[in-house]
Length: 223
Image (cartoon, rainbow, N blue to C red; front, side, top):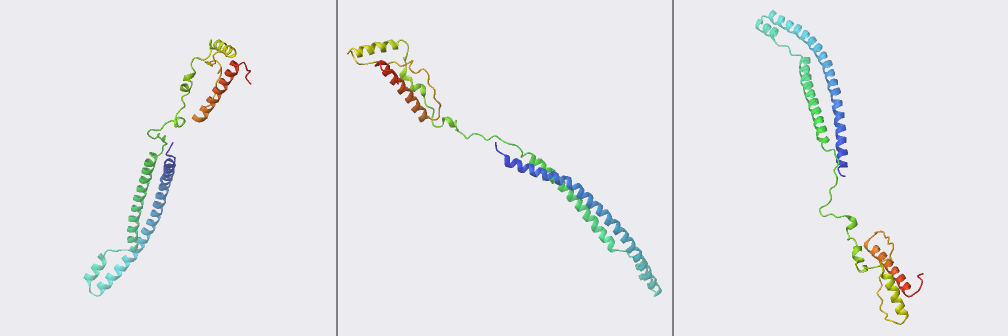
């Protein structure tokens, strides 16, 4: 099977994504809690600065009115008060919104990572190359049946024929002998290791069987 590396890598990415998904809510909560603490502080600071600036405006308007500059006094009283705390609070709110959007996108990215990596997990059986053959038959299988094709007609009544031929030879008769050794090979066992070794073993067995037949025909006990 193949795909171990890809599957393990995808599994690790899924574990990391789940860790991020579990951590993001804590980050969001912590950021929101700190935001509200800062917002409370800036509101208190803004209130204090507004009070101070209001008294400052009134004092400025009184001075201008006392000097006869009533238009200047009116402008001083109606001027908008811009405190540093209010500007800091506006920046804090913008930053908080951006952080929350970032956390939402991070969570969505982690979800997509889980989905995409989950699809990568799986093992696949390695296909055989085109034209591949059984390794045990790569060099060809010996045709043992064909090897024994010339040994048909062994055994049976041929034992008697061999005896009469042997008597003829001993009596000075014709010395051409036809030998059938069908029953001489009563049991043949071989283990297929490779073509050459099996062929050598078969040849040795046949040679030994023929030797025994020849000894028998000539009246010599096989050793």
